[in-house]
Image (cartoon, rainbow, N blue to C red; front, side, top):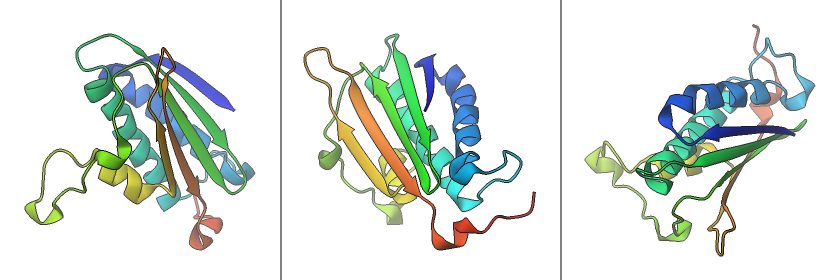
Length: 147
């Protein structure tokens, strides 16, 4: 397991995303020089949106920390984001109106579109909020692309 503790601030987003990219490249025991194509792009996109949501909505204007746990496996990856910001009701977030081409409010839609598993537990009584994201390798992603 890879664990990253970082301030929940946008200037740390790129650093955190680089760690996620490196973890994606460990999936399947792969060489770090051979990315998985869409798998990696989907995981990184979902993580970036989740990171933004924690910073912009969970902590809003207050300081806070974010812990990221990454579990690369032979068949996919699981990511857990822990924060103590404001929680929300995952089921209460409506799908965006894609015909209107919204410029905001797309984060959860992107996360759900990119990942196979999305679970959120809102912290209570001092417990952290936990967002768990899972992505499995698809049949076409099992074949490597040349580096």
